[in-house]
Length: 206
Image (tube, rainbow, N blue to C red; front, side):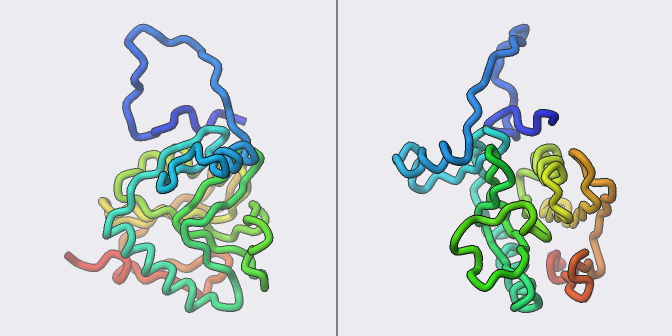
């Protein structure tokens, strides 16, 4: 598998001094070790991080527009998919022994226990949505190939600065074969074509 995450802060410039490009070995963490670090208090109580291919990656703070969009998506999807799917906002999804991202929204296969006994795995995930106000580049470069590699059937990137919804479908190896961009109209879910998001409401006029 190609390296998906190479740095802890994907949006920051590489701090390596010019001319120094040594292939230094990196310590990769497992999901079990990551959970143990949290239990021991090695991760800050309010620190927002996720595990991506063995790297503990800092997550961007949530601004008001980001939070509002997330509230809207959860409200619409929760109403339309009640009893059909579980809507999980900013909760962990265990993709492998070395990756446990916390997407903004995960639409999961219905379970009566709402995944109380264990976090969802790739086979449980129908759609992942990331809302981006400052991390769109990383969400395309890192999250898209990550989700494609683990067979997540559909991935949405809500690009707030560009007022655009990017829809990724048909995962194959480390990429999605179908990528479309939408600024207006209504976009339906692949697994639930009767359910849609109105982009006029998602991106209201200023």
